Image (cartoon, rainbow, N blue to C red; front, side):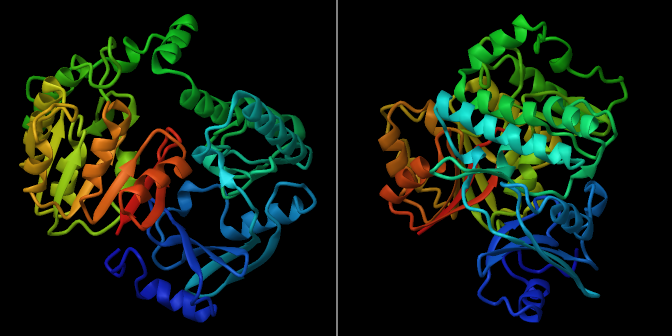
Length: 429
């Protein structure tokens, strides 16, 4: 990793763009787990690229690019599947070139119930056709399903696809039953559940889980039992999770923490896997030497990791819940960092805006907080006071980008999608 100098275009990627005469290409995506895998757009074609001497995640994928190309060729006549155009391999790079399919990821959309039914029906037709061809996609997620404004549906990203018999592929793709072991197994059911989570209130989802006999408050969220000689870090984290579970800062009425984390072989349970989230956020921009403001910090794992792993100069983190601030203090103690932690209700009448502006942050985080603020315009006007913002909301990207443009941001880019299907947006003026 030492040769990787610039997250937005270092010498390795300059070399690729020059070698393939793609200097005007647009960077669409960089892997959140491997900075040496990228996706570019040029000339209405998609270029999936691996820097062969440096990439570290090929073992996580079912197919190398050559195998993905072969599978796409086999499915060339199936509507809604990217056309395979070319595959190249040099000593330095491997490249898969496909046609660009129109549409926006289902993860970014908030379709009506009727439109969702139509989308899922069209996706099911694609999956049946793939299964008949002996192909199981294996990674059916809302981020890999494209939908146009006219209702056309496509399925992309076949690097986890495998060859199976028709019935095996059909079962895997629709039910998620892993009859033949694959590296991942995200199915039609996975995508449908993701869409339901976005449409249904948390209390309804919790009720349905209880109705189906799944009590999240028991086994799934049981805290680990530590031995007497457990490390100081583990004991501090256990205290943090004890505060978090009774804070009502995640799902009111349920004893659950917001994040889950694995440390020294122990699992601290929560609703969202922290490391998956950190893998996206850590690469959005350069945090080194920066002053950072985190609004709605919850357990403040982000603030602690920015100080611990990203060389942030100083971090101020705020949340309205007093108990979750106590959890955040224990987490900072566990990781040996010192964010400034404060309790603050963003609907309070006091002039908190001036106090926070005096901190003079270089970067502001506002992740999943706008929904819980009553005076949304006041909060958005405050966000508009800064030059760089990393934002996550609950509405579609179109709705959120309109809000962000209205308060002065001009460069608004999606840098990732959370496991809940929400766009993570990097905003600059």
